[in-house]
Length: 178
Image (tube, rainbow, N blue to C red):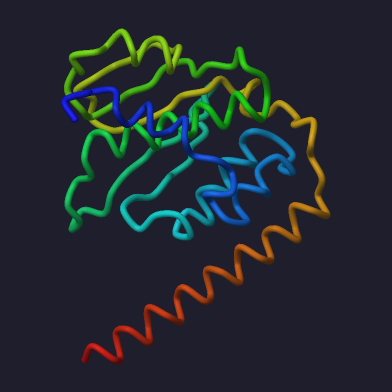
């Protein structure tokens, strides 16, 4: 498209329903960290391109986005969209003013850097060694207003069933293709 901020704009069109039961489960999570753990656990429902790794790093909570070593690197716009969705989700779950401590992206500096700064509202580091969103621990551990352990468990059960079905379908395809 020639728009280096295309991925950020795509993210604004993604709704919780796009992520199946996982999207509906997020607001029922106990904390923002719990919501990210839920996304990481069930990410295969919405993507097979990458994965999310979560780390406590002192006073920071890190969300790392990576692709398997043997897989092609996704387009910059796909990573941008994924990062933007996570930031938007954080704001939707906590409050609109929430911003990460920083965002590190492997991609080069975009032509429309200003759009990245306006949308993500966090210090940005390009040409980084990894794709990372860093939050302070206080933000990551803030209780969510919609926390509901019973609903969260029910959504987790649905998400686990979807993963099981996906795995069975993958095995059937492999057997059929051999």
